Length: 114
Length: 113
Image (cartoon, rainbow over all chains, first blue to last red; front, side, top):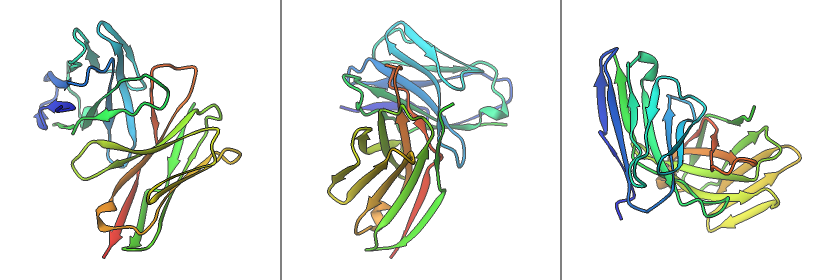
């Protein structure tokens, strides 16, 4: 299994541009999450999904959108990039068969908005 | 709201024990986790403890939970240079059944040879 894969690894955007961060998992996990990690800070939840067709907001959803048309894919869309969205973005998935289920993280996408 | 706090930096010598501390505010926290992040990588679960436990040991790792003080610690015995990483404390609590985690800021562990 490849686990959780994210593309691209790095990206530089200009203010106002749009992009989609891709996330795919091959573990048949129902639950998927998007986090952002700012320097010196913990991870903040942007959006999450408990299954195909179901998404919900996390702590910091403003400026982002998500969709979940399949179990495997959970793309994150930035519509009008702003410097405040410069961050490292992590996607994670979980089987959620119990409270202590681990979340499996992808390697991250480092995004800079100039 | 829920909050998780950690000290930002710890430096130890190879072979020493490391103790990384974490405090949390949500008294209904059900599970508390320790994740490790190596440079340029995603987070990897190290261990977790259920809120009705005081201690959990897993090879070189010992987790201590003081529910009264809402304090969690991770002890790494015989710390190696390969343990150099950022360590995150995280918690999850009911009634959410979504597995949402609240993370601390992370503690950077530097292990000197």
